[in-house]
Amino acid sequence: MRLITRMLVFAALVSCQACTSGAESSLSSLEQSLLDKRYDQFQPAAKAAAAKGDAEALFLLGKAYALGLGVAQDLELGRSYYEKAEALGYVRAIHNLGVMDLDEKQHESAIRRFELALEKGLQMPTLLNLGYANKPPDGGNIYAARALMAQSQKSAGYFTRAFEISGDAEAAALAGRMYVRAFDYARFAVSAGQLEDKELPVHRARAVEWLEKGMKLGSANASTNYGALLFMEKDFAGSRAALERGAKANNAVAHQYLGMLDERDGGDALQSAVAHYEQALALGHEPAREDASRVLHAILKDEEDLDVLLQGIKRLQALQGDGGHDYEFRELVKRYNWLGLKASDQQRGRTVPDLPIFLKACELAKKYDPKGHHEFHRGSHWALRSLGGSTSISFMFQGDIDRAGCATLAKPLPPAVREILNSGGMTFLTFATSSLLLDWEVHGKRVYLVPRRLEDQIEIPR
Image (cartoon, rainbow, N blue to C red):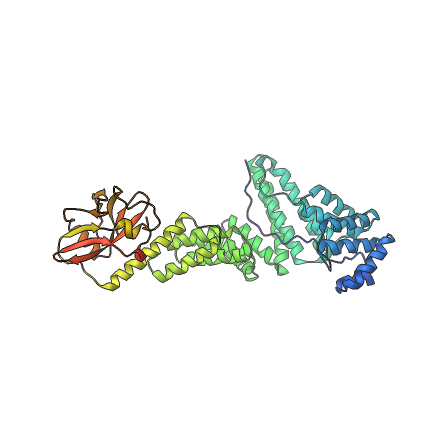
């Protein structure tokens, strides 16, 4: 059984290949030239020093190629320079190789290098990266819950040490985030009989303690994760207050949770839910795309205002991008086109007179089958249907296109057809894989159902 852990925000990994560290009290002239982007001076000087076995020069050349500073980025060449500096015991090279290992998901190698860098005195940002390297993957098996809890606590421990050194709000937020994870796994461990229920308050209190430290220092990530904690505990008012602080700082996950809260409230709040999901997506939170589309479809499902529908369709197009449109979207577009045609008919202000109504749809193959689908040729089967209007009727009229290329009925249609047309409904012919919208015309003492113009033919919504 896989575990589902709560959605939490994690600050970006602090690789700091480009950072200086506290290991040196001042920058060398060589490193200063790299930082100042005086690459024409840096490259020859660094290569000359590296040829003599200068560890710093080898490290700086590794950084230049790994990050593309003044040269084309070349990770392999950057790694080779770092490894030469590492062989000379240069601590910053050891750390940056750990970062590269972590980027490549080589966690064991990354942790080994970070621990060595820490032993050699490079505390920051090594402690932060040890926190990242030791965090457990999302999910996991319920029977491993206790081990995952311990791993989360180990990760949090590195972040707490980083906070004690730096006093940085994000270090506290990261510690809080991992203690929340530990609390989640502790709850699963209780369910699996691996932990006693009485231990849960201790785990929760530790998570809250570190989240509050981050919040006091202004961390939007801490506020967001505190809001996520309260959300799962169904303290929705407290959750919203914390999440709104995160959202003010453009935290994507905060917007995602606020969307979930608004969606839970329903009604008019659904508009706000979509706006939050859209904002979360704009800030890079990809799961919000599906949520925004789903709620927007629910809002528009029964909407008949053409302007509102059009704006909604445009928003859905932006959400779905170039990845193709789903069935619901296509049906929404069909309904928009249908309502637009219906509105156009109403503007014409016509009323079907009290005359017999006949079906006479001719020249179908000539005028309405331009793509050669052979739907409207002799022998093609058709059925007469209606959509909209104040009367609901299931037509039992069907037949085949005759020798003249027409769909006709010898007998007049029932009075209900007039009621449908006069109350805003329409009639159409259905074929095997397509349909043909009909209009009406008066000729003498008869009303005929005839095909609409080709440019007025639209797909019929379901």
